[in-house]
Image (cartoon, rainbow, N blue to C red):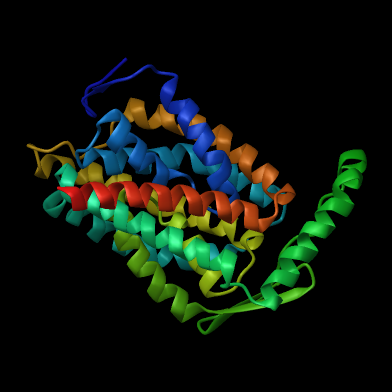
Length: 314
């Protein structure tokens, strides 16, 4: 099948199948999988124009709602955290889209940028596995996993849902919520500042920012991955919507470049991603947090090494 905007030819089943496999695991960690679809499209499919970034954002718009819906249904959405992430990443996304078009249109420089981002996110997740978590953090995740195991049969037989997250305080200074018997408090100002930078990076890369934000919330703010995944995904959806609209507005300004998304390719990836994210969000409660993080960290560091080694060898 021909994809004229991307300038590639690929079997129509390949994009949804690849997106399903990626998003199933990344959804468990609060990421849509867009950060791993970029290397696949860049290195395997040979899609490298600025339209790659907007196509990836389009994937997010199709795939993310299904995973978010599952987190909402299970009562694992911290809504104030979602609004904080979305409100501050959108301005950064606009700036990032312009930087991608003007300064990183070629494969070599964009490949270096991709490798650097993958390396950073992989290290952040690795810190969460090997030393970034406090006893406070670990106890809530362990309690949650034990609670899931004890409720598993009850949930199947009676349909009784697991306990829901309860927000206790949300203001300019801080956000506080209860999660399976533990109270978690974070600085709203710090998350605002970090989200602005993540929005810039996400706009350049072609993702909503959840892949970066979720590891920071887990490793840097010591929040359980089970409680932040939904908010990170929803924030990615909102910022991806803004990025796609902005890319379409900029397309006439740069007639010599492919800027607007490849709609068919993005939709095919999105269909597979939607199924994978729903299944991943549903399965998350049955996977230990370290396994979720370990899978993500391995994929990220492997790909980062590939891109950085390739750049260094040139």
